[in-house]
Length: 246
Ligand code: NAI
Image (cartoon, rainbow, N blue to C red):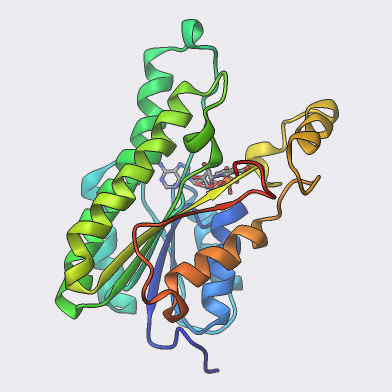
C-alpha cells in the first residue's frame, strides 16, 4: 500500500471511538502507522487491529498524566517509529451551570482537554524537532470560540487549546514543526448521543447547513492539516461546523 503519509507515525489520543477513530482511519488509509492512545485499553487495541494496513497498535494512557504521556510516546517510538503526527483529540465533558459546577468537574475537564494536549505535545515534540519535521493537530471546539451556557469548564479548555496551538506554532515553526487546530461544531458521536430529539432539532436550526456533522467531516480536515498539503499552514484554527461559528 502506498499513500501520502507512508513512513509517518501518527499518535491519536482518544482514538478508540468517535472523531479520534475516524481520524485514525483516514491516517491509516493514507499509509501512516497509527498509535491509538486511550484510557479504554481494549477499545484502543481492537480499533488499532481494525485499521487498514499494518503496523498499528493500541496503548493504554491517561493523557492527564504527564508520566504516562512520556512513557507512551517512548513506547510508540520504539515499536512504531518516532511520532511525526500528533492528534490531540481526547476530550471529556462535565457540563453544569456555573453556580452548580463542582471543583472536580472544572479540574477534570481542564486536565484531560487542555493539560492532556500540553502533556502529549511536550512529550512528542522533541522527536519531531530532532527530525525537523512534524505536525500537531489539536481538536478544539466551536464552544471554545463562541462559549456555551453550562459549559464554562469545557469552553475554557477548548479556548485554551487555541492559545496552546498558536504558541506552539510560533515556538516550533523554525524547527520544522507545524501546529494547527480544528474546531468542530456538533458532531454525531457518543459525546452528543445523550441529546434528546428536540435539542438535536433545535441545534439543527442554529447550524446554517441544517445537520449535525459526522466524525469523517472532522477527520478529513485533521488529515489535511496533518499532511503535506498543509505544509505552509501553521497556527490556524479551522472550524468544521456547517457554518455555526462564522
Ligand atoms: P467521545 O466521547 O466519543 O470519544 C472520546 C475518546 O477519548 C474516548 O475514546 C475516550 O475513552 C477517550 N478519553 C477520554 N478521556 C481520556 C483520557 N484522559 N486519556 C486518553 N483518552 C481519553 O468524543 P468525540 O465526540 O469523539 O470527541 C472527540 C474530541 O472532539 C473531543 O476532544 C471533543 O471535545 C471534541 N469535539 C467533539 C464534538 C462533538 O460534537 N462530538 C464537537 C467539538 C469538539
